[in-house]
Amino acid sequence: MARVYISAVMDVPISEAWGVLRDFNALPVYHPFFSKSDIEDGKPADQIGCVRNFFTHEGGHIREELLTLSDRDHTCAYRILEATLPVRNYVSEMRLKPITEGNKTFGEWWAEYDVSEADAASVQQIVGDTFRFAFEGAVKVARARRTA
Image (cartoon, rainbow, N blue to C red):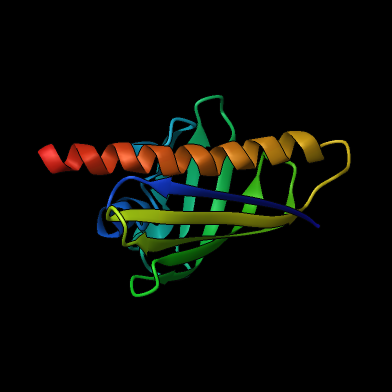
């Protein structure tokens, strides 16, 4: 089983970072990889069990199911149901924690999955970049919302 772990210090308060990242349907809003996302069956984007169906700009397709979402703990977990990404048994969790010094946020995002040896390095890079760019994009959106 492969594992990718990314952490970041986000220069926004946890309420602002969580306000962006908790929306299970907002990937195209804050992430440069993704072009379109919809929650299937018209369910709310924060309902456990909802499925987001989204696409990359290059035509990649992923369907993920929301497993947990906690506003109290600033965490969410999800699993891939199907994807053009060559992984199996993919489960991921994201967690935010407040950094009191400077009113910043510590973000952690990790995933575990099965992948062939031939695809392992490229998938690790893609997943790591996905998490890293998500944190960076969330900061940009949170700051932009301050002035909106």
